[in-house]
Image 1: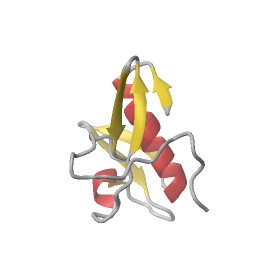
Image 2 (image 1 turned 120 degrees about the horizontal axis):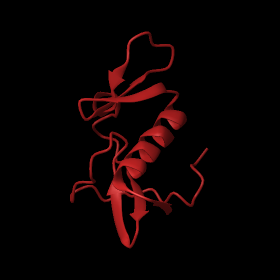
Image 3 (image 1 turned 90 degrees about the horizontal axis):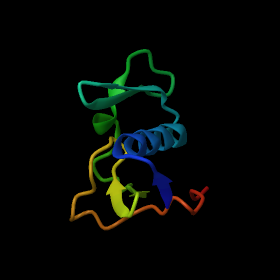
Length: 93
């Protein structure tokens, strides 16, 4: 689990990691929504639209003494989503 100094850093870190793993580039935040360019894309897309609805990816992060699970678009993990990716483990190849 990665320890971050604040929530904003944690959200950015999780979004960046997902983008790197999925070939998205030039991550930015506009009006509270995270956007990036898809692989070989010429227009950015909101990450919440890029993540497959059936995907259950989330990452557990630590901010001070609090642990939370974040989705790749920066939102908090919903209670009905059972899978948390432990950031200490390397992603499956």
